[in-house]
Image (tube, rainbow, N blue to C red):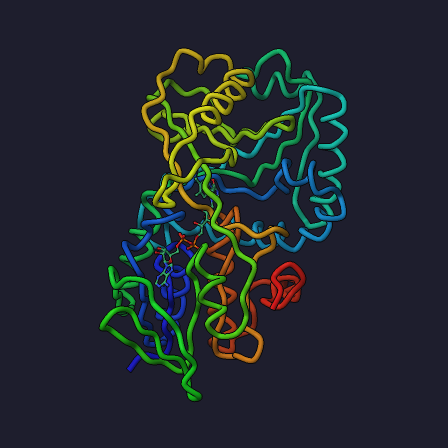
Length: 382
Ligand SMILES: Cc1cc2nc3c(=O)[nH]c(=O)nc-3n(C[C@H](O)[C@H](O)[C@H](O)COP(=O)(O)OP(=O)(O)OC[C@H]3O[C@@H](n4cnc5c(N)ncnc54)[C@H](O)[C@@H]3O)c2cc1C
């Protein structure tokens, strides 16, 4: 008999299952396909804490202020990332070189300064840099860089290593893993929840929905259709190069994230749209790939001679307000959602810890304004 069913074997689901099993619960993790087979392995490996600049520009300061609880969650989650390798006894290629957001105009610098003030209100240390300082700290940048903001706690990890390490630890802690079962469906039984996938089924008093982009559809099966999208985006990686970029780099005027992995490869992304093929599968969009690379080369001219060895596309779990959704579904105190949109690689460890605390009746590990994340909060309509 299982105490809790966790639906979804990405980072959010594996981390939740591990936390619950370590606290003594009997946990069954139900994964439609391969654990970590979706966004949690296909992502760019950035550990973010800054308010993302692109939505800040488009949605404005009021949106950014409403997003402060998410910044606080990301700060706590990065705290967990700092001890994750020791906790899992695994090398996850984690590094904390800090995040650098670069301005190429006075107008962009003014936007960065306004955003930094909101980030500081949420408890994030952000340093504003002028032209000389940014040139001294990041000599790899183009002459066009006139300043920026530096968030020391930001960093990177290798997404290909993280879910496998979590899953090993979860299995060692006693989690029963049912993978490759196909898409599961949930029904409330009155005393708990029944999950059915193909000819297999499981029953438990409690359930966690941690199914990434599919979380909204599963929550709808319990009466709360959360407004969650699956948005196709793409990332590229270069051949290995000598050490060049120690930071997680962003650009204020265009969408860009750029970082150098342990093996020297540069990962280039920033949320550029991919396209869908006739079967609805994400495919790399060539025009957006070229545009993304142009932005990267304009920012870091030394990468222009490197070959791109791979580009890929995957669905990211998105919401319009960008806020995490964490907690029980309306009318279902024992059915909890564990969901962090857009930056869920960074934020899922903290979301998982909070969900485990709620299920176990423990005080929350972090003091956060949880009402902002409630499944019936504005932006995730019930
Ligand atoms: C290209 C790309 C780049 C990104 N870059 C970054 C980044 O640099 N930093 C960052 O913080 N975030 C990044 N993200 C976002 C991040 O990867 C995701 O937010 C995060 O991985 C979500 O984790 P998850 O466990 O909630 O979802 P997923 O990893 O998508 O896992 C959900 C799992 O649920 C399973 N599932 C779905 N439906 C069912 C069902 N009905 N029954 C059973 N199982 C089901 C799926 O098969 C899947 O394995 C990026 C995403 C993409 C796509």
